[in-house]
Length: 383
Image (tube, rainbow, N blue to C red; front, side, top):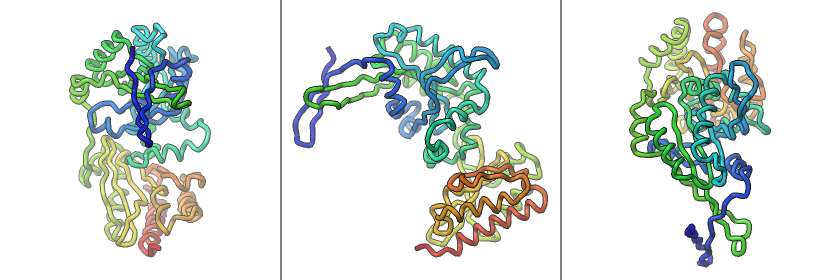
């Protein structure tokens, strides 16, 4: 018999809650959909403490041939803030498939999804959600250096390379599945494999309607962590001017490198603060301006060959806190041939190819807009 869990209320009263199985598999699925944070952090201690989840799709269809119709469906597709696609399959302990069969099923899903899902598939699913998915994504990425465009590009890259995560969820994980999960996670280099046990505890008489969920992560063994850390992966790096321009030159038109150097020189003359990001794969040159007491990031250039207009950040400044002031930025950019930014994205971070600004007069107009934004940020007195 499972031992009870005891809860001590603010009144000092002790209440016991007993383990209780989920009535239906759909309840478990809904639990993950509503609260993906129930899946514990995994990997090394740094990532495990900071990992966050974004639900992309429920019942995601998977074909078994290029251009074919869906043959299977995975219960949930999640991504973390590191852009790792995560396949989640939910089973109740009473389902006999929670044993060996579920592993073969998951491997089928992942093998075919990584091969036949087209670039942009996960982004399309996420964008089709109700509400404002763009705003949710911005909030999700707020503490990262990735723009939405770079984030989804990284998701597709990880999917194609097999750098994905498999998670089995059940109210109870049998020993046979524990052994399989630990073996696979210790020996697969790119793909991570975990199981999560989500038992629920209830006390209908003393705490009606209250459920206690106690997640348990399986597969995060010391050996698995060590083996994964040996996998050639792009670690975080602190970029600087030299390495940013070297990477930009390799990945884009040489004229883009010249343009970036011109913008950097402009920034130095204008007294704009220039810093560099610490992206794993993409370097970023970050521009900030404002009164001495505070700086606001207003643009970033990426070594992948793009410039990001950071309206999400300048909206916190007095100069651009009004929606119309940020729409004015967009309108100025939209006057440049080839540029088309939706004005409803005035609180986002539009990302534009640097190639649009190589030739005159687009180059001059770009610098003029950046100068105008800088002047507004520097001259605005904080309230």
